[in-house]
Every structure is written in structure tokens, then in C-alpha cells.
Amino acid sequence: MENGAVYNPTTEAEAKGSRRRPFGCSLRHLQGWRLPVKVVQAIFSFAAVVCEEVVDSCISCGGLYFFEFISCSAFLLSLLILCVYGTDLYESLGEDKVQKL
Image (cartoon, rainbow, N blue to C red; front, side, top):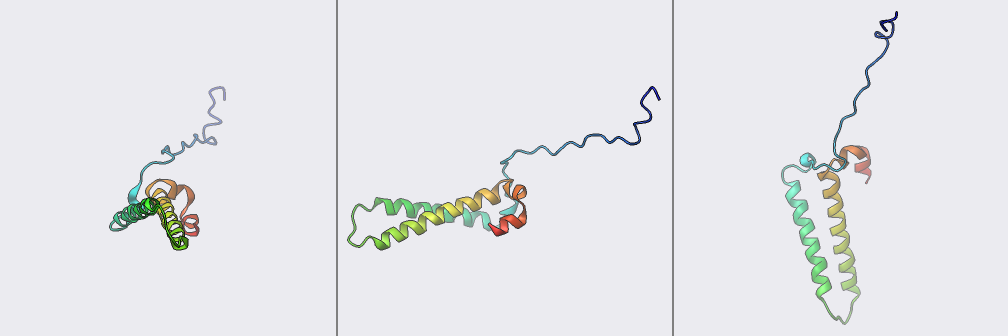
């Protein structure tokens, strides 16, 4: 009993957690045609935001402001989708929470 043999069968070694970077790049959820489509969508929506900002004056600006809102929203949402599906955040959140998002 002095050598600690009593404790060997009942004690478990500490399980080491998996070490992964919090925001590592993982493109396995955007395979095939999905990744290029999302990148092109982000580029086009950013170009729309820039083109809208170039306009100096307008007579009826209601449509222009609506276009600015839609293009900016599309740009931010496409970046969010690229960040969630392109990093390890998808596994961190879980598939059910990503689907709700």
C-alpha cells in the first residue's frame, strides 16, 4: 500500500482537450460551387455599396437610400456567412444554432 497500488485501478488520467485555434480556417462547409458564389456575392455587394457612395446628388433619393440599405445588408450578411462557414466557428456554435442564425 505504500507504493500507491491501491489508487491505480480507480484513477483515470486527465483527458487532454483538443487544441485548435479559435478562428482557424476550415473550408469544408463551403465546398464545390458554394465558396466561389459567396465570394462573388460579397464582391458584387461591396461594389454596389461603393457605386452608391459615388453619387453626389439626386432628385428623388428614396430609391437610392433603399438601394444603399439593401446592398450594405447583403455585403454584411455575405461576410457573416463566409466567416461562419469558412472558420471553425461553425463547429463551436453547433449546426442547430447556425441553422437558426
